[in-house]
Amino acid sequence: MSHIHFIGAGQMSEAIIRAALKRQVLQTAEITLADIDPARISLLRERYQLTDSADAAAALSKADYIVIGVRPQDDIAAVAQTITQYAAPTATVISIIAGVTLARLSSLLGATRPIARIIPNTLTDTGLGYSGVVFNALVQPEPLLPFLESFGKVMLLEERLIDIFTGYAVAGVNYVYYFIESLTDAGVLAGLSRPQATQVAWENLLGAVEMLKLSGHHPRQLMDINNSPAGVGINGLYQLNNSDFAAGLQRSVLAAVKRTTELSGGN
Image 1 (cartoon, helix red, strand yellow):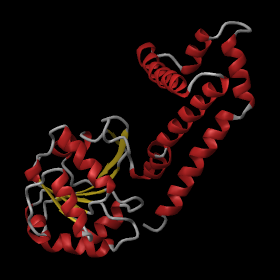
Image 2 (image 1 turned 90 degrees about the vertical axis):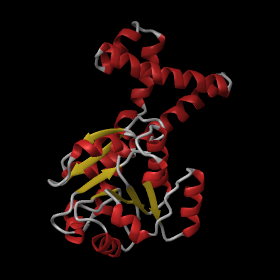
Image 3 (image 1 turned 180 degrees about the vertical axis):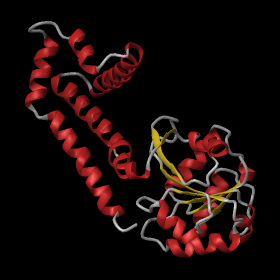
């Protein structure tokens, strides 16, 4: 990949840099940083041996890709003004700012600017999980996709689905963590040690996903195979059904989507 400049050196920008370097999609000499906290820039330069120390104006002038990783409440207009002042007109802007639409970005950066809007997942170190991606018509996807795929899988979306994707896919890992914690606690409650219960929960989760992939079956089909009449498994599922587990999970997802929509209103 060519030179890439990060505006905002927070946790997500660092996670993306770490993953891209690990998978050798980026080289240390190709990365420059800008942040309101000079100590943060120094820390990341030292931590990842970034060798290019050009100032913000010089870094922007040679950047082929510019990642905007500031917060939604920051002065995005000022950031955009700096980009239009120093960056080449052909440089692609990659926004990871939650709730800021392509239309708003285009109004700030100019109608001829290639812009990609990315909602990254938080599983960047694993290479798993999906990032939601929207391109405007000026982006050339082919040279950009290897970078985006270096910190997870990519799901190309219509922009109208971004809020749903954020509330379901990006927040979704929370529900998996919560389920594993609850299942592990259940094993401890039943009498296993916590290390034993944890190992079983992890292995069952990985194995169940692999079985779904290998078999191509619906989860209900595999549950039917796993449960004999009046057996242990079906009795456990009966109690789980009485807990309103499925509807509670669905309400949680809808609440997350609703909150995402509220936070992105007007952007």
